[in-house]
Amino acid sequence: MSLVKKIAIVASGTMMSRILGFIREMLMAMALGTGPVADAFNAAFRFPNTFRRLFAEGAFNSAFVPLFSKEIEKNIETARQFSEEVFGVLFSILLMITIIMEFSMPFLITHVIAPGFSSNAGKFEATVRLTTIMFPYLACMSLSAMMGGMLNSLQRYFAPAIAPVFLNIILIGVLLWVWFSKVDAWNTGLALSWGVMAAGIIHLLIVWLALRNAGMKIGLRMPHFSANVRRLVVLALPAAITGGITQINLLINTNIASADTGAVSSLVYADRLYQLPLSILAIAVATVLLPELSRALRSGKLKKAYVLQNRSMEFILLLSLPAAAAFLIMSKPIVRLLFEHGQFDARATTIVSGILAIYGLGLPAFVLIKAFIPIFFSREDTKTPMICAGISVVVNVLLSITLFPSLSGKGIAIAEITAGWINAILLFIILVKRRYWSSDPIFLKRIPIFLMSSVTMALILSFAISHLTWSLSSLSSLTIRFFTIATLVFCATLIYFAMIFLCEGVTLSMAKRNFFGKRK
Image (tube, rainbow, N blue to C red):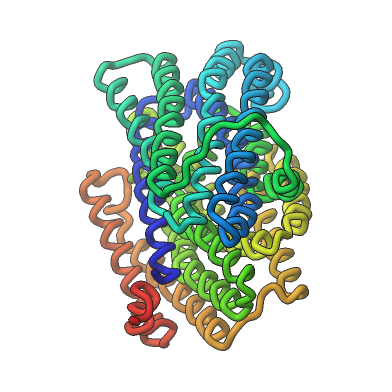
């Protein structure tokens, strides 16, 4: 199976989850708007989600996968034994964290998650209650992330990619029920929180069954810090920080944004939109690239590793550059179409679209970070990305504190993308300096073509939008706006890829070979 096809399998599951996520956010905007319950739910959900990405996905998809891949190369039974040792330690740590956090929730909301909510007793109490319900979601998703890493190492990509879809299916079902039953805002927040908890259990069940079908049965052992587990801990501590750097910034920014009513929800709605290309492209590439690189390096195939890196970067830049241009040019029509219903008014559209346009400028940086980090991790180097991530966090915090008083949510978005670009540039410089990455003539030829095609597409798109003001405004019907935006996106995509093919950045035979692989 070719690299692109493996990425496509992961990306398809992620895309399905994100599309359903859009529907979920649209329904949530209609039900809760940017009011106090929306702020409380978003802040509450972000807390366990941040820990999940820090201590589960960040650590295990980065530190566990190379070690597990190494054990598979030796013997499948030693790999199973190693996974059981890790599972026992992880389960014990998660149980301890969950108990401590549940009893400390009022203190955490006041001093860590959303200090700005303390002045509003109702919002504060709602956030405490909702976070308490949802926090065990962390344990389910952390164990799922470990099993998903094992499946990826075994080249079973579908189950880990499709499992997150069920979170959005359940929450959409809850939102439809509360909408038709005319449930009040507070009970809507409660129902959503219990839905999140149920989704975590279902996610864990799906990957566990997939792992058993793959012939890798793991049981629960007493915690035992073997040599391999100790090595994992050494790698996982910096990997957890690095892998979850975006989440660290989001948690800090939630803390700062909680001082302004509606700012937290505005950032969440904009984040949901820009996360679509980021998740589909960057996360899919990173998920596939890490085990593939680990196997190539373990086999001593350095040339193959360089080819994997170059083709992966080409693929994500091919799709992320036009996505960034589209967010910059047409953020307002997109936000108006998707969210301006019910409690979400024109003022909210202006605020969220402004934040989204700024995020568009940072999209290539965040995509590149996701592609650069596996190159370090596959070599069991987790400290260097951690240092770069730490620098970007400092930049983000300083800029957020400086810009938020005057620019509110836009100031936080500017801080995020600036920190992202600094992180990406630092990682790239170190990769080149240490010779972890080597470009080839094909890569150097294609990237300028992608850039030129994106700029051309953006100019044509901007010209078209300026002549379709009424069709894209709130004065026109939802149907007209939908078909206008769909036509613009279709034509822009056609123009972009036509230029790519005309400039020979990609050929038809090359595209077929990359997706279907070479014939034997």
